[in-house]
Length: 184
Image (cartoon, rainbow, N blue to C red; front, side, top):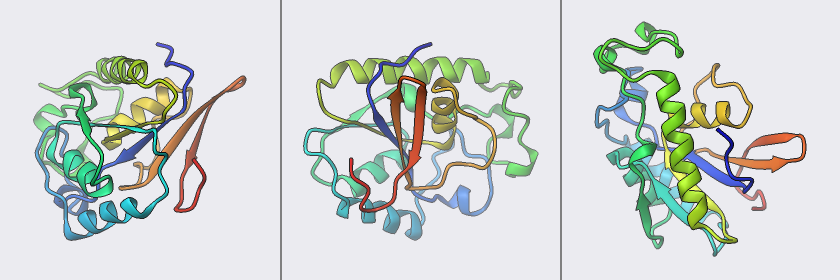
C-alpha cells in the first residue's frame, strides 16, 4: 500500500501501567500513569501548526493523551488506529510475546494490522488539505507506519509521548524523532 505523499506525525500515547509493568496491552484498556499524563501535557507547550488535524485511536490511553497534549483541538477518532490484538497474550509479560510476524492465537495477523493502519491513514490524509495530520496511537501503529514507509518495524518500541514526523522525499520516506523546538 502506498500512503499519500503528505507529511504527518504519529505520537505514541503516554506511559501506561502496562508499559511500566512490561505487560502486553494491545486491546486491554491500560491507564495512563502519572508520568504518562505529565509527559502528554508537556506536548501542549510545543509549537504545533495552526492548520493541523488531530486523529486518535479510540482506546482510552490514546484519547487521554490527545486531550492532554492538544486541549483545544477537536479529536477525530479513527477505529483503525487501535493497537494490535495480541489474543491469548494480552496481559502477559512482554517477554512472552510471539514474533511480530507470527499471528497470536485468537489475535490479529501483522499483515492485517499493517493493512488497516495504512487504510486509516490514507483516509485521514484525504481529509486534510494543506495542514498537518497528527495521529495519537500506539507502538504497534508506529511500527506499522514504519513498515508502510519503508522503514524497519522491528527493534525497540517507539518511545511514549514522542512525536515521529514522516516526510516523503524523492528517495522514500524519512522518519524524524521530534524534540521540543523542532520546526514543523
